Image 1 (tube, helix red, strand yellow):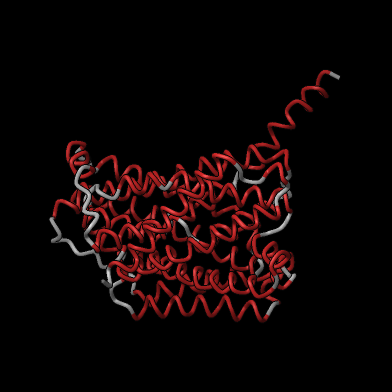
Image 2 (cartoon, rainbow, N blue to C red):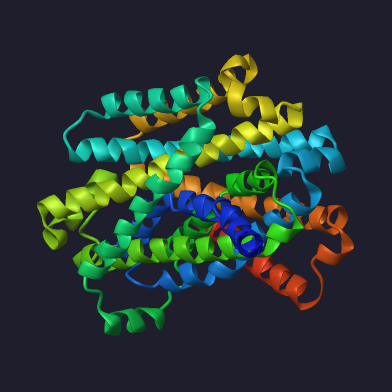
Length: 413
């Protein structure tokens, strides 16, 4: 009897631990290659000046993803499925179109990471791209999503190497304070990189993935608190990783006063070599980039599979039978092939990465607006946003969206 009571007392804590995972995983995926390159570019061009923006995005990142947790747990539907149920196929397919574009953009950035790792070790770009594309296609065609997703969390932990990179770069705290007091808000390039950092933080596929993951894990109201902590920890972790990359770039490459030009992930690693040492730079940076690229490629493509499957009523089948759905094979293969061709043809991979993140910033108002509409109509009254919480959400969302949109267009003015 005593052991039975002890076992029952452990069940709640075990269930809370089991609820963890989707929040941390989606946030590790958020620190993808596009995020790495954009943060490095910001550090090179503007030192520590954009660091406050990265940290200031933590609250809104948590609020957005926490809302997907609520919707998934208390409606039992994925994001695309819920939009379909509430607003019909037109809106659902419009959002799926944005998801396909965002996933393709994400895959582009991940392939630049794979190509950059190949460059570090002298492997031709085309060979690296072909091998990585075949690996991602095999994951889908063989129906291995669930197994690979578990491994992705372990792979993503390699991103913690970026903290070591920031530590050994020995940032100048005095210079950091000086940069924070000198923010060139009228400079269009500064605003453009700010928009890119916003877009790299709020990837549309994150909403699709985490809400569907809540449903897939079968979480209910008793898991809500654990899922929120999972999301909060992930939000802090991903932005601290991004900050570490910017700090390392600002402390090392930023001292060149614009003389260092980043052309690829391999170029970033090569520029860090004098600081970290030739072997350490290659190994540490390669581990971080590879972990970031792989986990983001898996999570973003799984989000697309879930989203398209939900609209067509085939989500459950796609988790194990994606290779038997010709329409999905066509969509997914098209995204992968298009991404490979773009990375192969475009020489300036940093420009391509940054532009992809800016495109995400333009999608942010649409995604947040739809989340708020669904929360107001689909959630049980007790779990809808209200009062100060709602106003904080609105102010942060509107302010961040405005900065992202203005920064994205300011470069052309």
